[in-house]
Length: 158
Image (cartoon, rainbow, N blue to C red):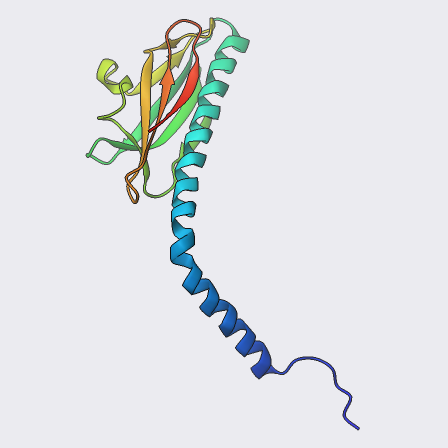
């Protein structure tokens, strides 16, 4: 009497094949949501880091905190940024593939040749500016505005 329970190798492989086929048919419909989410997450992370830099400058009192944008590929696209204070790196971030900060559409690099933002102990930023993130794959843009005075950091959807 044969009382074995379980699945055969062929049944398991057929099930896996069916799951792969269904997933491959659904992927083109899901892909726009994945790419949209990638830009939104990058924008939210940059906003959080800018707010962190601002609050660090306020808490340290009399110390400036800088956000430096770098790794320009020669086309006016920054793919990394670093927050530092007193020559010590606090945080270094590499943006996801196909997401970059546009030098041409952002306004911080036109005023300051070193492509950086400076947060002061009173909560203000120099220069007040707009930072634009672009997804190369979809062409979508998200802008972040930093206002003068006690700095507000806001996301602007296009």
